[in-house]
Length: 343
Ligand code: CP3
Image (cartoon, rainbow, N blue to C red; front, side, top):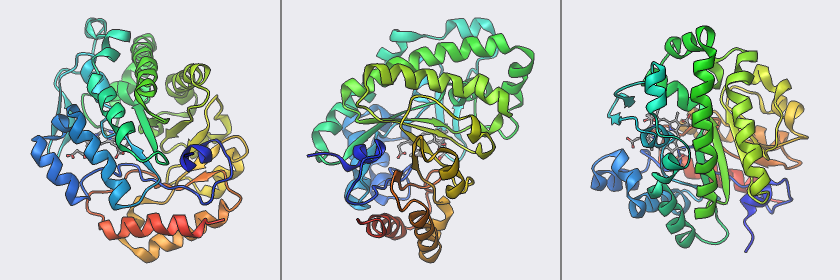
């Protein structure tokens, strides 16, 4: 059976517009909390293919989304490049020894060797492709080199990005050397995800908005484009979704060989359509906090459906679902998207 999600990524006509939610496997689901408790902690859960497979499928069964996204995290990549990683409850991810000099950069494990250490991800995907219904797509993913490098240099989330931006302006060669190393791992990582069973891949560039325009293209988009071109050349049948968060002012310069552009919630969908709708299928972009209210959800879904009524669209949120959203409202969102777009 064909997968309507994959068809939609390629801009083909589908019976309705498919829908999924970023961070759909996670803490708003009591069923997720139960499996995470059994695993002990979040990283253990990522490392356990059977449990990771189980939580990946939960939102398909419980919420009714059209695609499953691999349960993992973008930060397992730097972790397997040799950086010690902790997910501290309430504080988020922390690297104990951030990369601050050439010596630390050179000590990072690169290429095939790093990609080969992510076996638990490939095992989860292979298991998932067996367990998932044939008509549901399986999305693999990576962080963009820029977003990963930001965490690797800062060591944790940041409001100012001052440590990594100091490198951008005072030591750009150092930044490019790190981005090159991460890009080379990510290319192999995505290839291996596809070989293991991913039907679609998404590149998350969560920290896109930290950079001014010319620096964004130099330090982030160019590397994402290189990864997309590499995957496209080898796997033309695998759709690629690019999600740079928070750069509505840069859309005039967006180009490259990929299929779907993820629109964040701060970018008006009609504007994204005008700028990119002819070249790319658009994904998104309801503001995730609207999920606190059914009325607010209905208002946004109706508007997005109206703007995107000619198709070339995938419903999603404009960023990840939050942990305190009622499951009932997530179900309502998914069903509404599928109903209003019926053709
Ligand atoms: O979308 C999915 O359901 C698939 C799984 C997934 C996770 N993280 C699970 C997760 C995906 C695709 C990610 C991507 C990710 N991770 C991004 C890019 C997307 C985005 O949100 O911008 C980023 C920046 C990270 C890094 C990260 N991981 C942070 C900052 C945090 C802590 C903040 C938070 O939301 O708690 C995580 C932890 C994390 N990753 C959780 C989950 C379900 C929560 C961990 C827990 O269960 O305690």
